[in-house]
Structures are given as C-alpha cells and as structure tokens.
Image (cartoon, rainbow, N blue to C red; front, side, top):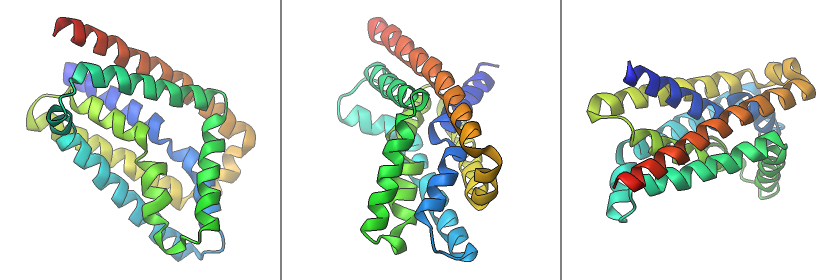
Length: 209
C-alpha cells in the first residue's frame, strides 16, 4: 500500500512539474513554420531524450549525491524549496514568462535543428524541477523493483507529454488563455503542498540522522 501511495505521489509530482498542457503553446512557438511531420519528429525526439535524462537521475541520482557527500535529507529540503519556487511562479504566472523567454532565445539563435535537445528536452521537459523531483522520489523507493516502478511512472508522464505535443494546436485552442491560467494555478497549489511535504520529510530525515 505504501509503495502504491509513493507511486501516486511520484506521478502527481512529476506530472505537475513537467506540466504537459503548459508545454503545448510553448512547443507551438518553438516549431513555428514547421510542417506537422517535422513537429511530430521534434516532439518524439524531445520526449525520448527527456525520458532518458530523468531515467538516468532516477537510477543514479542518489549515487551522485552520495559521491558528493550530500545527504538525502539535505537534498529533500533543497529540492522541496526549489519545487516550492516553481509552484510560486506557476501560481503568479512567472513560470510561463520565463519559459517563453527561453523559447524566444531559441528561435533568435536559430536552433531549429537542435530543438529536440535544447530547449525542448532540457530545460522545458527535464528541467531542474523535474530532475530534483525525480532524485527526491528515487530516494524514497526501495530496491530495483521500486526503481523500475518509478521509471514506469516517468514513461507514463513523458507519454502524456508526447500526446500533449502531438495535439498542441487542438489543446491550445481548447484550453484558451483562461483555461491555461486556471489549470496552471491549480497545479501550482498542488505542487506547493507536495514541495512542503518534501521539506518536512527532509527535516525529519536530517534530525533522525
């Protein structure tokens, strides 16, 4: 039962952090002037790369922290604070402004052929928040079975990202400006609560250690 709750929490945290519906309008801006086939190719490559990046951190994130001498408790506190900052940006509409700036920079620098890598895979899909969340969740699962379940959760979330990018034009029209703003704020409040829980768990872990 505890593992099921952990995976539900993992799915919710990653879904909110990656924010597939929020990526749709940014993806349209990035791929302006491309054909549908070209857009789908960029979407597929970006999603696969994002999955690969998050999987690496799910498997080896804790080992990297250990090698650097950082305790999981300390990382939970730091990661929780970072996720809270993202939640704050989502609630007060700062995150989309920052993402749109990244999108604009990419177009002006003519990175059309590398869009799948930058800025789509990094930092729009596998950004600091998603990477932090992945490492945090990885530290709460036990054994290889837990890791495999986490990778399955990452695969589902990235599958939803791919669907969202494939349906970007329709999704953008369906949600509209008001719908996107409402959804972003609701997800931001949810992420804020989850990030506070990470900080609380981190403090408990630090004192227990």
